[in-house]
Length: 184
Image (cartoon, rainbow, N blue to C red):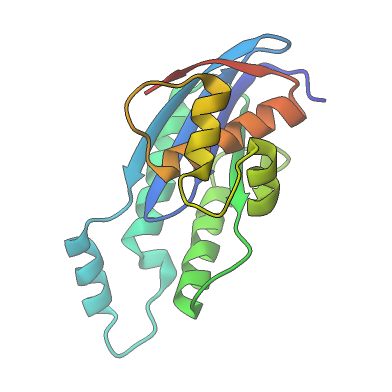
């Protein structure tokens, strides 16, 4: 178990990225802050795809990758260090383009100004098992979140719920710390 103060950022990577952050209090309880970042508008994606028409798009020019890296770099500047970063390790893709995009997202995350040993990942099935989510429905993680944390606040999208579970998994399995509340 890690016994250190600092900050943790948990990410549900995607075009709508769920971000959960907390300040780690060793042996204590931490509050969770949630936000969703839309990495590119439809018009930005359309312009990007049109500029790459007839050629293979370069993922480092993808507006979603740039926005992800910029957003997280700015967020890191505001958090007390040291910083740990966690994300869901998705092991499937429906297309080559999706696999390339996920790889680019991971590249953006791994190039953040964070020490190399301060990254965690959890695979999808392990996260669902940890959450105690039952069934294949998309809202199973939300139902488990509401039950576990007695959450009655505003509706959360699945990106936020997954980011919250990733953060909870890291806090409990790596830092032996619990969440005390959820902030939106």
